[in-house]
Image (tube, rainbow, N blue to C red):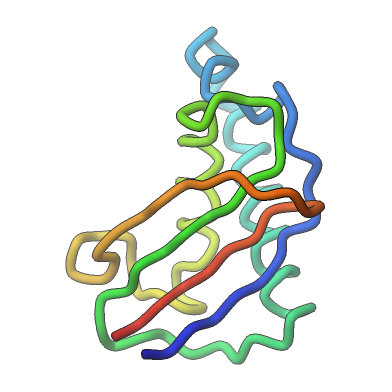
Length: 118
């Protein structure tokens, strides 16, 4: 089993909450926020010296957060992180490429992403 892990330097707070998205943020603001997360994801991969190599097998992804948000409030952020890995570690986020996505809490700074390929 191959495991790749990297950190995203982001303080997760109410700004990134799924509740905030549901409250009706304008699409241009959502687009800007998504682009910010995509960029931070790529920077986290590069800082961790993860080679740009798209897996040819479906992967399992675990994203770990240290925040005061409810676990399900990380859903939008998890989607943006997964989208940020497209073309770098995964071809797409369809079931052909991603077998599972799990969210967890942990006690360190930033966001920890773990990608497992069997």
